[in-house]
Amino acid sequence: MFEKLISFTREKSEYICENSFIIKNMNNIILFFIILTLLSTLYCSTDAIGFLALIVIFLSAVKLFIQKDSIVKINSIDTALLIYFIFVVISLAGSTLFYLSLKGFLKTCTYLGFYLTIVHFLNSNRNKINTILLTIAGIVSFESIYAVFQNTIPTNTNLTWQDVSYLRPEEVMTRVYGTLQPYNPNLLAGFLIVCIPVVYGICAKFLVKKHYKSGIIALIFSVICSWAIICTGCRGAYLALLAILGGIILISAKFLWQNYKKIYIAVIGVICSISALAILSLQSIRMRFLSIFIMRQDSSNSFRFNVYQASWKMFTDNWLLGIGCGNQNFREIYGLYMKTGFDALSCYNIFLEIAVESGIFALLAFIAFLYIMLSKGIRFVLHSNNIYDVILMSAGLLSIIGVMVHGFVDTVFFRPQIQIIFWIMCAVLRVKLFEEN
Image (cartoon, rainbow, N blue to C red):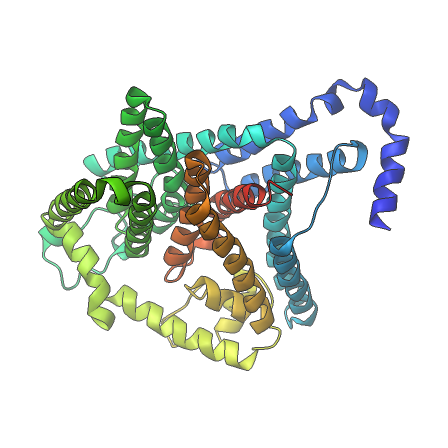
């Protein structure tokens, strides 16, 4: 039925396709709005970012229905995501707060539609992958420079961003928050985490190609981006950064271990030692990192534990279909479960959030989506001898892994600034994995 509809519209619009300047340049127009959507993440509101993403989706839909070269192929990754979406729809239908849940559902539709749009675009425009990734590297480099500069000047730091009750004045950290709306260090950290593997990947590509000047410049930006993450004071991002750097060490070992084992170990050891010494020598950063391990003595940790307990009760009471999508819907129902004085907008855990909102089967489908993508990507990295494809695949893998690690203890995954980049990286991985097909 769907294929017949597409064939019919393409047949009727053949004349327009052959004579319309806009239709002939549709790919360039879509690319322009993709880049504009990426740029909007730096300053624009969530509504503005969503509106630009919808424009991209609309233009891709027009292209799908009127251009003959537009092809839609479904694979195992898409199937898992489709099953997830089906359970989200069922959860919406069964929500006791339907209209509140509808808003969250529409956001989910926008994100998934944007992912499918990027997949569809890149399938026929694989030469545009580098353009999109360079744009991501550019915006995260700008945001990192701004954040580092922000760290050097007096700012109106919100003291609720850190528990200072057990700290001396010199141990209190000035947390940077960048330009992203709304201002929040954790949001900035999540944005840097999802983007920084792209900067690392570009640096590696330049060095492999022996473009050393460009490689050194990219390396400097990599260091700036890494330092900007430290300056956010976001402990979940610290863990994510460690996971990303650990992944880089393992991936680089594939090419260096056999012939340069001793040099490789020495270089990694020196870099790790210098980095650890530099960070731990700064009292405020050291205390911020160590606060991860003092459990309920830190009010932020204690707050999360209380939210986890209440959210788990919400899940066990609504384990089959969940309560419906969206933070407004969540907040209304969470009030029935929360511990007094510990209000929250979400579960502060990606997987628990999905389970609470859409039920156990939606969670399993989302985990299946991640598992299929990551497992195929890791196999690709292990067996491919094309170093440039390995670098690109590694950037996508580390971006997704970083977001999942950060999202395990934070809520910013559901912000559009992070979702837009996350789904682009998923789309790049998906397109490269099924390039042969």
